[in-house]
Amino acid sequence: MINTKWIFTPLIIVSISLALVTCTSSPNFLRTNLKLAGKNKSELEKVINHYSTNPSDSLKRKAALFLIENMDAHYSYVSKNWDSFQVELDTLFHKEDRWQVLRSEFNKLYEKYAYGLKDITYVCDLQTVSAQFLIYNIDQAFETWKSPYCNFLSFEDFCEYILPYRVGTEPLCDWRAELNKQFMPSG
Image (cartoon, rainbow, N blue to C red; front, side, top):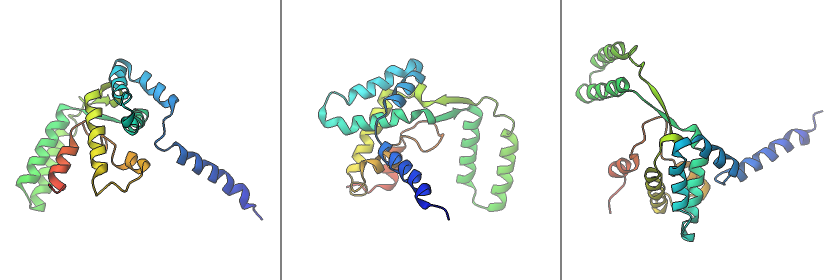
């Protein structure tokens, strides 16, 4: 008979450890990511310093540290051919709604660009994101957190669901303004 104590004890220890790490600052991750930032280190330090002067910004400072400590996993790709493909694809979907025509035109676009994406460049957030962009996004995220739609979230949930400045590998942009314009009631 298997002693379940030996199975569950390590799982419980790992779970508690992960819970304690969520949205907390780790000097090792921060130090490593500031080093990986290279010439952009000063931009990231500006963000930390921006929220270090006023004690009322302590949660914003903690949020900034969370973003910077996790930034090594965030990046985008830049490609003029990919951008052109996206514009043509968007145009196609706006002007055509018949499935057969869409499919045929999409296949033509795919053939046109399938081998033309050799100009793709990897862009690491640590090495390119500006202090102004991060500060704006942190401030906007905190404004969103105050709204009736989000004010019930814990700080940990806020860090995971509201704070991130990007969703995937899309180019950095002001998606919050567009989201608010499209979906938030004005009042």
